[in-house]
Length: 248
Image (tube, rainbow, N blue to C red; front, side):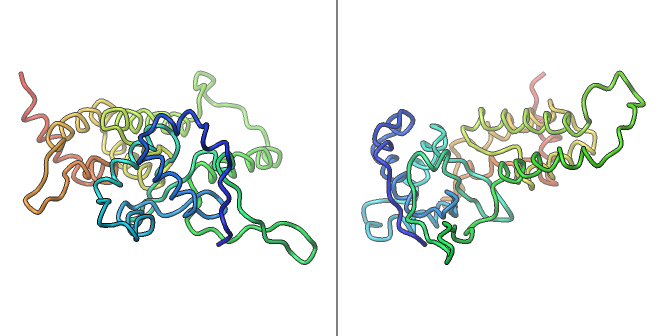
């Protein structure tokens, strides 16, 4: 991986200076961990092990969790999930760093291979760039229903965004509505007949149940306040539990 050169503008970043000194330090450590595309693995134990391997006697894993959340809240990083892993994407990484470039025999700059899957926003950009090409090859077909102004896919995406935005606002997280697993889970629950209010109700009730709670082994129940837990196959159970506990 090439050497990272931090830009001086990082010192005057308004968003960064809203963070605590410790969170700012974590951000700078993450900057030297990311690949040429501004991404790296984002699971808290991995960040803790890589960024603080020489000072684990002074920094705890809960410190890293708190500082990472500060960076999310101040829109310095974004988190997305794929499989059972979390990944970090630096927001506007080109504003904070650049790497020493490698060159081909022809003198053209090259990038190293990605170390993470592509972030959802990059996939969407590629798809949007391909749309005009597809449109040019398709015959225009009259709309059989003139009253239907929006593509059904757009409506589903809007519903998913509203649900994820509600979760982020309620819990203080930074989940993306474009993550493949999140979209898949929400679509599955929508097909079962659940509406937006059902999702919000489950989020509210499980937030009240898990906020600030810990298991006997010390596990933080707040870790379950995430799409892959809330919108899983247990959704119906959460919803029925909620309905039974709903005050008259």
